[in-house]
Length: 113
Image (cartoon, rainbow, N blue to C red; front, side, top):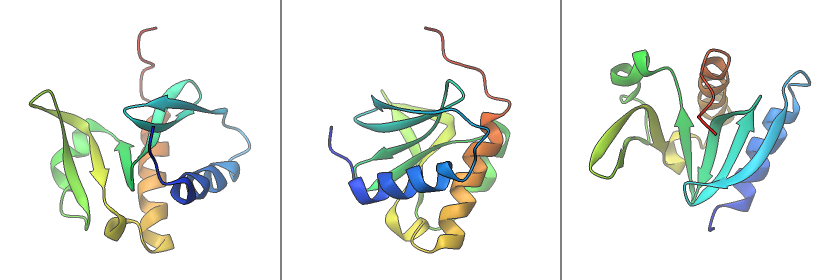
């Protein structure tokens, strides 16, 4: 499991600012997933963020710098994207992605166990 430990710490520190959420860390998708209230919220995958967001925003999100569609087994996953370093370099951009994921997490369904 190779992931950017500094980026993971940045995510961890951001999530620590929300005392009313339960955060667990799990190896997932070849990186480190941050589970918020039992649901996958954001993942550090290599040097990238892997974001889970409202699928209804799917087409409108890809104009953002560093944002790439997530393809698994030849299929595009709606409501997921990878964000390269250029897309979250500034605190403002990093906050955008974190807030986007946390916002959707409130209404996202948990995966089947």
